[in-house]
Image (cartoon, rainbow, N blue to C red; front, side, top):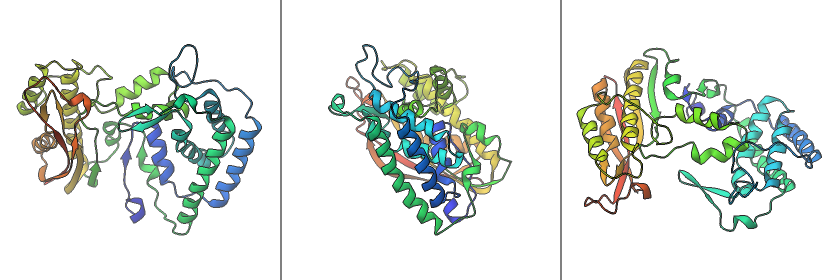
Length: 359
């Protein structure tokens, strides 16, 4: 949106797949002639080699093998995906990178799962689906025609500015260290919610099938770099680093019979990471800069965690002023946030826009 109106905007994304999509979308040097010519070459290469077996990624559930009960892609479907990836390697990087985005956009229809909120679920009667290599190539070609229409539209209204060059594949703290002091006019973000979801999980089909991770050690490294908002990593933090208001809530939650005993440490880490983020944003922002955070509250054992209020409190301790906390919408708690044994009852939570200002 900033690029459309000519505003330079730095951004950070730790997930390599999401970063790839963002950069590909922001590039403005695509041309319909170049796209069509390169597409023809890719389709010819993929169809010429559609009978060649390709090495399967390491991920244990990516396809049928052994006595596995469930798998993400049928063997022939996966071979079609891998065959297209091999064909991409023989064309220029500009369109190679865009074709990977085209391919990612059809994985949901090719595969056995669908995205459902923060997770993937298997489709009904997924075992009965039969999508061979030719169908994968056909689906890719069909979706590429939609991308071609977008390129034709953008060619008519060219923009000289591309924010692709200032979109960093890094977590936010790594990325902010590259930003000069007092150089930022505004910050707009929606950080992970403190809800125990590992946001990398929902993208596991793309990460593995498209080659953004090649081993389980790659996945572990990626999770280590994410914002502390899930229990997939054993986090350890200084218990004295937070204000009493947050520590008291964590202490109350710690006394309950949680579904995972590392949740209190995860919550502590979330607000320690948030405190560090706000401190760094104080450094990089100009005077009178506005910061907009879209955040969702959460609860554990029906103990409310008012993330919006707590972030505003942390921000004020760092030196920002709270201009507004605007409730955007109520939403239901996830199953893991519902307690059936506690006497307390929280039926819904809220998503809010926290607006801060640097004095």
